[in-house]
Image (cartoon, rainbow over all chains, first blue to last red; front, side, top):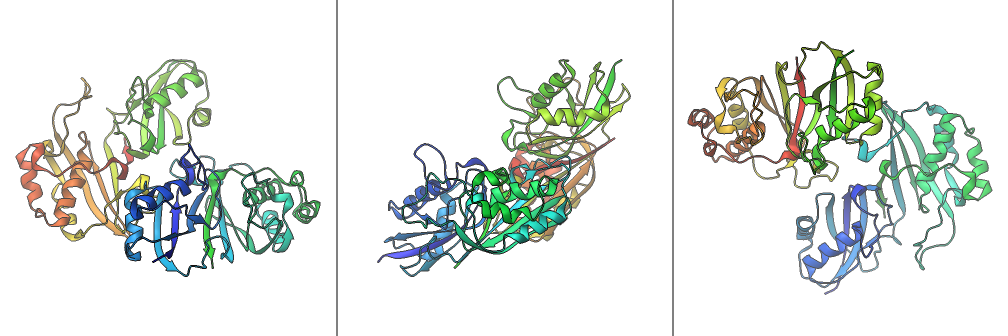
Length: 250
Length: 250
């Protein structure tokens, strides 16, 4: 009997060429597909809630796949983990209705971007942060972050996506529910929750907020950048290492 | 004028073939020697407080090297860090007397060994712990750890060291100042401080304490293992990933 299985995954993206399967590079989707193949005996391509770029991590990514295999759902997480490298873990597996789709059913996603501020970055953090030890002012960055809450056209913060799926929405309008910076010791973290994100959107937002923190642009300019609707209006793309997909809600 | 420079280093040992320089593998000592060469223009081999094995990490390792370069000591850490991968960091550099020797002058060293106990190991911890989710009893492990405090012949816990230096002591007698397990959430950590450690000694102690925690041997057997003075009396070598050189005292 066909079952639809929802997986919650965590991964260290450093050594992967991103989520999406590629013929000659290790990817999260490809590694997971091989593991599912070994466990179920079936060739399936699991669907993720969205693609993550090379080097981007996940605390909670969601993927789903359909299977006819009789394996009990309670055994799936361990069986997959036993065949995958320690850098990808299945945190849980559960059966969903056949209508459930990891991307299309998602109502909200949360990303966290970590910036390490001290002069020397501990080697155990280097894979998981953007090391930025230069002068930055947090308060205008918080102000700029607040400017994007609500429904906006995020064209200025979107890279052209060469792998945009045929069935994915073409609109660049997204609703942001919350967007804020907080600092804790030597680390500054940006957390953003929204109904969807364009390609490179969080990293482009962070790159722009850093321009605000440096004083290159004023926080209020964030609105003008949104209104410009062109990529060149915003800041550079922040490095992948600091970005974590933190949650997907259904 | 010849100066003797003391460096405090931190490193993620996962992607290195240990401390000691090798002709065709990336090592900590070799990477540091290249960086010193680029910064001072001199060919020197920095001396470490001791070798760490492939995959072993350091929160605080100490190395020293002599140089005639005029570079101000306050610039050395940044200059070296700018030429090394983020997995090795110089935390500080200071001038010492010419008599100072990173290994021979060391009075005490502290190692920490981290064991992750929950069923699924987060991918961001996998490089820095031994994932051991099986049944273990902490109390007898604490008892066994206490048994090694004091001066003992640690032959049973020492691997034959193929790279034993000609000027290093041949005796297997070491003094342990403290040796204890503590648990914090899903992590159990063993901390041991002593005047010196033999090759693989901490990992062999941990492997033996785990046998005690499983109930395979009683905690009091630790003394008999010491007395046996043969490697086969003790447990297996615990994985390198969980081990950190935490401090070196002078």
